[in-house]
Image (cartoon, rainbow, N blue to C red):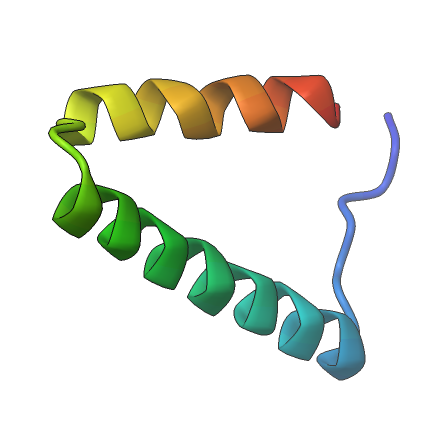
Length: 52
């Protein structure tokens, strides 16, 4: 069984920075369009699936 990934502090900082950028982008989408949280969630899932 493969060992579970444990991110380094540097990796955690990158992840946190990326998450903040995604959060801001989602807020902008909600403010500037009629997109619902459900649509935004589906969009983020598609993006995540693309990079797996």
